[in-house]
Image (cartoon, rainbow, N blue to C red; front, side, top):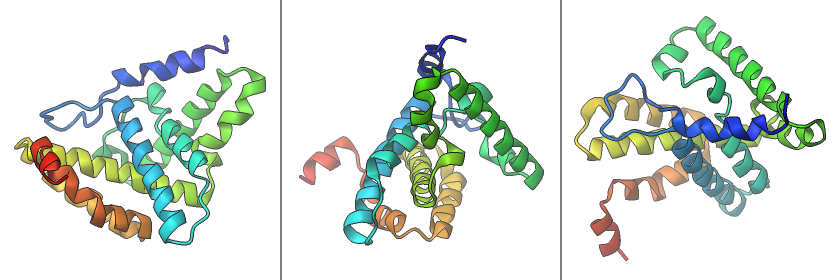
Length: 196
């Protein structure tokens, strides 16, 4: 198998639509979600180190965010209500993600693979995994807020569920982001400009 297939597969993330079971006023693909998650993960890492006494490897965190949903290139985006419907489905999907990650990693040349492995799910340290999970959920909340702003009530319950999940994480970094940064996402461009 050619070592170039890994990156060719990554380039296909833009074709994978998220929120498939929801009526969307604007679509969101996996690339868009991944970039936003990486931005938020960076912010959470900085907050951790500056305000919470952390020692997060921010570069590693942001790189992990870039690769956090790569398995969905092979599995697709399984909707949350299905993924978490019961423990057996959740466990089976986790195993499927792991298999997909291993398959993707196997597409890399042997001499490069070890640099990518720590960025995938099973290799992440606990704090990176915690902040990445929070960033992923915050990105989902932002999508819900954007849909609500566009007059789409379909995302109201999803937003509540994601905010509850973030609160349950007990992450001081995520709580700071929710308090200080999240409200601004509901502003229009004119409102953001007027606040300067």
